[in-house]
Image 1: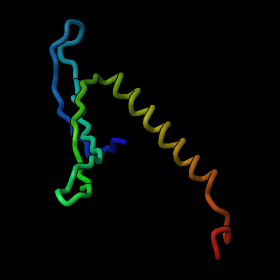
Image 2: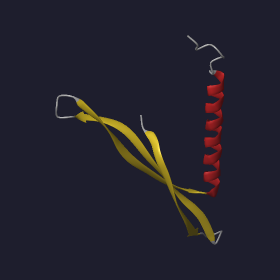
Image 3: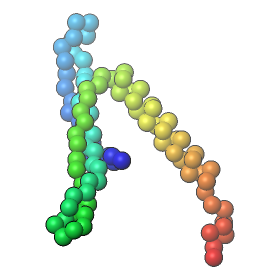
Length: 92
């Protein structure tokens, strides 16, 4: 499965018909994924490959993306809290 290895952003202003300047962002996600290749000795070596995903977004869609990501964060925290072991449960 691919993992998020890093992020970056480029900002720009576009000339618009209704607005003189429209702020835009190019969001860049750097993804990493394990791959396996022969190591030359009959075994396998694990390496990481990377991929870059870029997309442009305006203010309104960016706010929507931020809201969605914050909802994901809340769901992850709630999941963790639901399965949190009770005190002494893991004691051996």
